[in-house]
Amino acid sequence: MAVGNILRGLPLDAEQEFAGTFLGLLNPFALLVGLLSVAMFLTPGAAWLDLKTEGPVRERARAWAKSSWLAFAVLWLVATLYSRIAIPRLWQACAQPLAWVAPVLFVIAAAEFRVLVGGKRPGLAFAHFSVAIAMLLAIMGQGLYPDLVPALGAGESLTVMNASSTPLTLRVMLAIALIGMPLIIGYTIFIYRRFKGPVKLDEHSYWPDVQPRQRRGPLHPKRAAGLPAGRRLPVGRINPSDTPPWLPIIPWPQRGSPSVSFREGSRVNG
Image 1 (cartoon, one colour):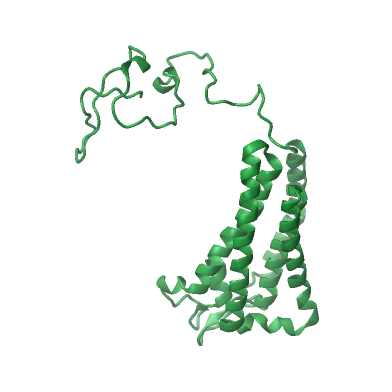
Image 2 (tube, one colour):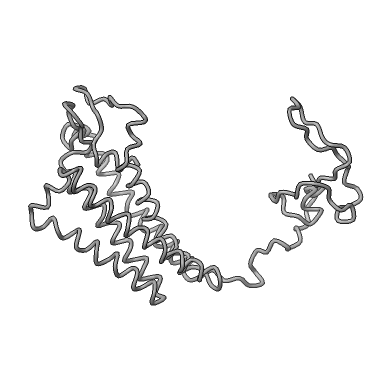
């Protein structure tokens, strides 16, 4: 929604301060771009699960990738038509022939994603949709330039010139980026190579029914009962034969009580 409001423009005063209301941010275009963003990240996420899992989970992930891609395509088409009618300022850059490179690459990469997912090639599908996201950001950037936050009305927009930091700050940040980015890229490559391939479930995998490891001190009551500590117990009485005899009978919380009180006679593990 924030991206949609920036593309649409914000009400700014002469001092470049926000002069609108919260409800004004909930406009149709911002909501539409918000839904588009959800579909945009859900699509490669499903493709990544298709790449990293096996069996039924992989099949469900592949189905989600196809469905989310369709939702993304429809929402993108609607947002594009909406911006062409309601925000023609975003289309001014299209007067230059080079401005059509990013849209063409976006359409090709997004269409190839659907073909590759259907062909059970999730790795290439994920790479193609990454290119599609990059081209979509390029389209947004060239539509906004030189504005960073366009102003609606008589206010002054925030541009790359009047909103930039001082030259000294820019030089320092450039040096930090030149040093830090290679480290981040190298670390990312190492991690992805270290954990490449699908996740396999075997005797070394975690299973919920694995017995808790031996340790000093008493176990968590739920662990001692053979239940994961984070699992909610069913509401109502529990068969006493299913619980260790040493667990206390504690009451159930009553509604409206300022302190913790319980219904007497119910067994609760933990």
